Image (tube, rainbow, N blue to C red):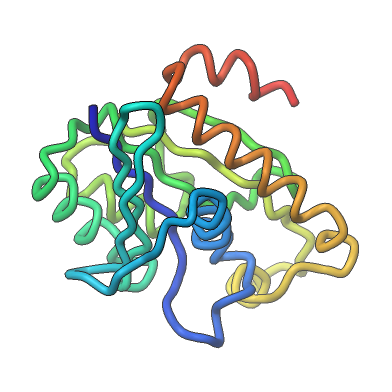
Length: 187
């Protein structure tokens, strides 16, 4: 079995530690734990690893957030991975900081990366792991907030929340989405 695990973010040093790049950060931590190295490939940085007999393709799109669907669609087709074996790691304004929610499908909730993925795949029926970044910003300042950096208080628990996200990825691959949602969505 093959899986495509995609961390969403924007390329470039100026975006590296921003809230919008939490998908990249989670995927980097997941890869590091398995000594997986990313290579610069078409439409993104790609790493490969094995997890108890399952093959994982890790992808950090290099297309910028709003065109992430190009990379997801390309690697899904290239690796012949069914849509039910795709997991997108994404930031979420509607969840408080560090909250994690795994969903089997759903709307893009205003997230341009998810919107582009749905457009390119022709469906919203793909799993996504939403990492809460909160929404403590003044009216009209959403872009500045998502492209801003986490607070010092957030940073204190960041490693633990990212590790929990990595546990969810492992469970998604090994146990499936339903068991994983039941186990982790209430934590």
